[in-house]
Length: 445
Image (cartoon, rainbow, N blue to C red; front, side, top):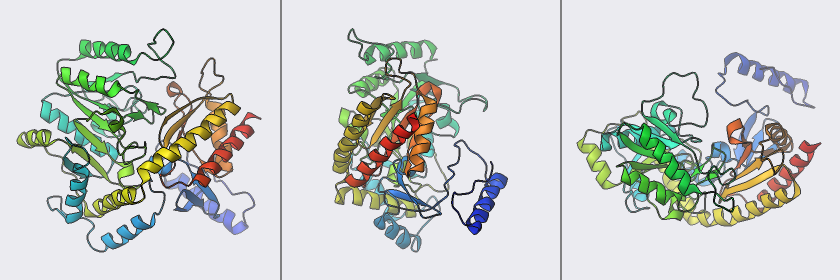
């Protein structure tokens, strides 16, 4: 990685920048993304600031996590107070923040009363899969072909969107079915619209032909984020739950990005009136800090306990992060941020659709609440993903002070994932849309 010096920087700044990128080259392991050249120094609200003090409007909430924005004063206050009182314990000890957060989460959805608090999304999915296996006594796990559920063990084995090659065998019994994509339907009705029921029936016929009779669970995101903001159509979750019940499988829903109000409901599955057997949360639950949870029914928890369920980690039930989770829930309720996700999401979507009218390269606008996708194509007739144009748009946006995250895996299209904090103002939304329009205009030249 070659050192990069900022334009118009002083000699001292240039030397510091050169030293920084030299250290990156010498000591920082590369782990997937291409590192952004603007070095970030601090963050507040909807903005991050580089070392030169220049603001960058954050339209991805960090790693799709900072649902309350950066450095929210209530979160800062909680961390300062809690870390000086009680931060970490032996895993067999309980504290009031852990029990209180478990209680509040466990009262949100009837049928999901029991709660396990962990650190990351991948970890919560590991626990959920392990739970499903011991309860059912089976081992086969099904997921969507565009899924992302984590980078460890069982979670990586049911992550089919990317990063599978070169790591040896996946877990035995890992199966994938196509995700229902209304923009690129595989099965259609006479009018050309997506026939997701026929697609689902076909997919499970293939699963049944491959299964050894050990189907334990299906794990899904209600909106596949890394898959390109693919939203499951209304009715799909109910049909999927029925497929699971017919086979004695459990339904695991991964709401790492859709949970805690982002889609305009506390949880995205609530729109469909379907309750999963197991729910996993992360990212938004800690508002950017490492907190995750697994929720399930009393019956499933009891059966797992009887069979010796173990998921003992160093940071299970840590009080510091539990206190943060309580604060996140307090702020969501006090500031009516779930309602805000609906109204702000409507404003953002209208703005994106207006850009779609202006620019032929925008093939589709999709998503729900404040989790939206913008797909860049060569033309609307072919719907061919335009990765080069998307790269140029992203670069032009960053140069203007707007950070957007793009899914660039060829099989998924070139999709910007747009997910500002729920605390974003109308003025900030309008600013982001304006910068986006300027970036697309510049990228066309």
